[in-house]
Image (tube, rainbow over all chains, first blue to last red; front, side, top):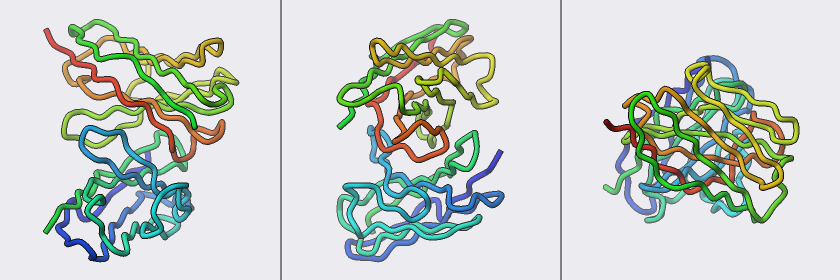
Length: 107
Length: 121
């Protein structure tokens, strides 16, 4: 199985800050990496697929980069509605494992 | 715009089974892969498996092999996930999600609202 490791597990930031979250796969997964945002009591929401493609309807302040085993999610200017938990997920092969999550909190 | 509507919350005893449904509306059903993900309280999402209704093919995570069965009823655009031999640690929110095509290996843009399954004696 491919293991996904996210860092940090949590961070505190202010509105307007640039935020970067990292995800590392235990082996190369090419660009088969997806990012989700999850708010309490809600289902995950797909933000980025195939490492860098922005899902329809997602604000352009979200961007993804990387390939192979190292990936990054960047929020260029954090907005109040962005405080949530973010998960990466590999879709290179099954099981489609998720990372442990990064909780973005208000500073 | 597709909507995935799941069945309601369940309370089950250890050793019993639960069957959760996921009905799709507003879009073509059988040509898209459906996956099931669960999330225990305070934990991250966990992939359980997926089904491609048009082919009738399934793929399950090794962890759930022998305990989970995913089926599809194309006539009602409904997918089912049955989990048997329930344990306390199966207490979780269970989600279905639809892929944008018939490949399980992808990101999932459309999700159901979740079904809470509580295992309690």
